[in-house]
Every structure is written in structure tokens, then in C-alpha cells.
Length: 141
Image (cartoon, rainbow, N blue to C red; front, top):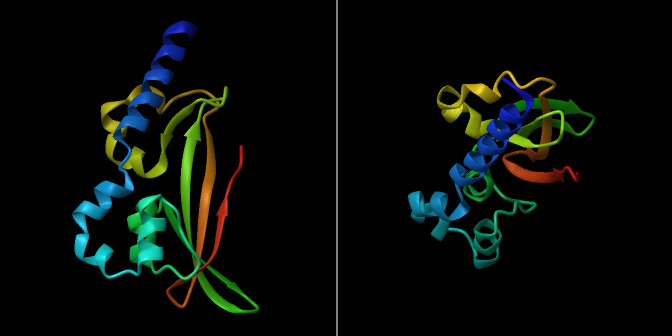
């Protein structure tokens, strides 16, 4: 595939990824009872796709969706669980797809899977201790 066609394909993939991304409103619609149980301040953060300290796992899923990876961490304060949200980009920095999106749509758009110099990047990590968010880290470009 020549360079121009590859760039066009990668651009289309990025647009499709953005268009197909599930929004907080979609997740709220599917889980109205869980959303309604949270206090107004928490509901407002969820509606804006933001994660707050003290959120439980359900609130985080409503706000930003399923994590791409989950790991356990043990340090001097005890054990914690870390959720990672991932994006993949081309060597030129063009968004190819997000991790969770990729799980569902990769078979439909296989041309971006073999993108040369594809990079993986954690865009957000959420740390839980005893079932509640204790830290949120977002990557700045």
C-alpha cells in the first residue's frame, strides 16, 4: 500500500474510532438505576466523563467505560488495583484506536493493526484501594 493510501486509511480509522466511542450518556442510559443512586456531585462528574476520588468501580465504568487492562499493586500501604485506559497511535501520532474499542472493532478494520511503529500509550490510570478510587492519573500529550 502506498504512503498516501496508508495515511488515508489511518485517518479514516481514527475518525471511525472517535465516532464509535461510547459516551457517558450511553452508559448512563444502560444503567439508569446505578446512576440515580449516586449523589448529585458524583452524577455531574460521571456525565462529564470524569473520575473522582472516592468513586467505586461502577461509577468509574459509567464515567469512562471498561478498563483496557487491570493490574494489582502492592506497596507499603497495602494492595491496590490499577485500571489502565490505553490508546494506540501511529508513528506520526495519529490516533488509531483506543484499547477497549479495539477489542470489538479490530476484525472490521484490520488494516490499522499492522501499522508500522504503532505505539501504545496509557492515557489514564485509576487506582483503587478497598474498592474506592484513591488516585487518577491522566497523560498529557
